[in-house]
Image 1 (cartoon, rainbow, N blue to C red):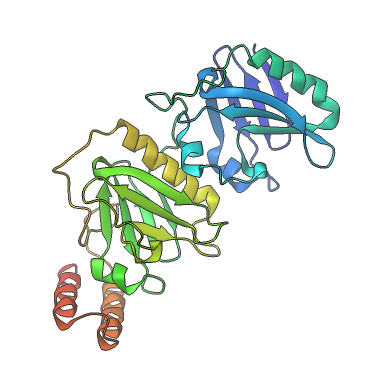
Image 2 (cartoon, rainbow, N blue to C red; image 1 turned 60 degrees about the vertical axis):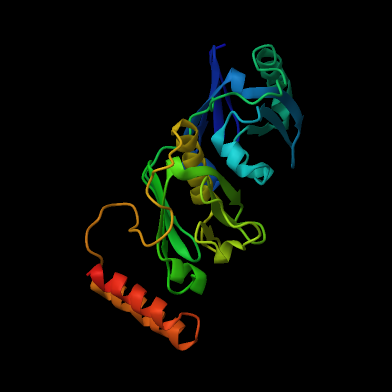
Amino acid sequence: MGDVLAGFHATWEFESDSVLIRFERGIRSPKLFQALGERRIPHEAISAVNVAPGKRGTVVLHAVPRAGADPLMEAAAGQLKDGSDPYRLVLPADRETLADYYADELRPLVSGGREEAPERYLVAAPEGPMQFKAYDGKAAFDGKAVSFRWFWTGASSAKWKAGDQSFPVSDLAGVEWRSPELFEGHLRLVRRDPPGAAGVQADQDPAAVVFGLGYGPVHESLPFAAAVLGALRSAPSSSSGASANGLAQAAGGSGRRDPADIAERIRHLGELHEAGLVTDEEFSTKKAQLLAEL
């Protein structure tokens, strides 16, 4: 096709086998679009194409993603607002005829509502390394493992007892992302073995970080979840990988930690001990582990 259609916040380039979406980085563009930059969507990753009236004198060209074709949309699981949906191109209403034209051109090329999920992702996952700050900890992904490092100001005593966590991709079965714009937003890793504790709230689960106001925003946490899913789909399962439990340093090396950080963690551990939330044995063991990192 080789044509270009420019709308609000994005430009679609129609190519012979795909649609290349280039997102604007302007201050008015959704932060998720700015973070994504551009995405190539193969025709086979699209199940349908629609044109419908939008808000305030606009029309929307919507390429409906095929289930299981895009790790970003799989992670989002229908939680994105329309304004942050990367498969929607918003145009002035007077360009409806042009939108209809491109929709008609695309329809014979797409998968046509095929229900079965593809064996692999057809749309490339965001690339790492990646990291973001949640309410109770910092999440990092280096392409091989996800690490959670807890914040003493937000992490629950259950997470402090468990210690910082590292999860090799080969030990994971999936990722659960609940938008920070919704109640109880979080990112939870689903483990192969041992499986995650069913019914445990995210703020008590060492395999999850919870979001809060200003922590874990969509444009950081969603591409993060999609990147992990992308790596997970291509990684072999492992029954002998590093344990997902116990103390592990956040991604980025095995160097010594800041003594001030260790001192602060020991102080908080002491508060938990005085409050009766940590036993004498747990306090002594954890304190020894922290001191060993100096």
